[in-house]
Length: 126
Image (tube, rainbow, N blue to C red):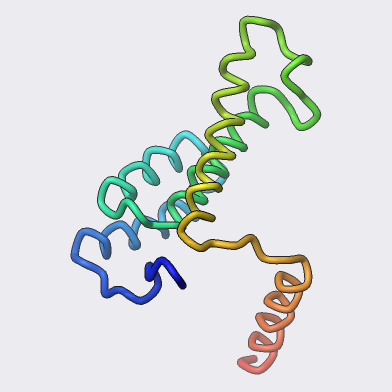
């Protein structure tokens, strides 16, 4: 809240960027597409935290796709280490930028409470 990013009205460009979040979510399992969409969104709205989070996650997914879940830098051939580091660093960097703007990763308790609230609302509307 200190940065004010949640209190400002959106410009037309920023509103268009926010609409791109729907595409980022839809394509979340296709990190190459998510990165293109998120970069477009950030070109329209440079402080769009959701696009930063999608970009960080897309880099993580690319690393998983190319190197696997358990892979560390030393588990890869020398020729692949630069790409591994690029994805890892981009993942960390985009999440850091989001945190600099005030985003905080939800705790497990907060996540569970959110999911319980969704379930209660679904039941209420059945």
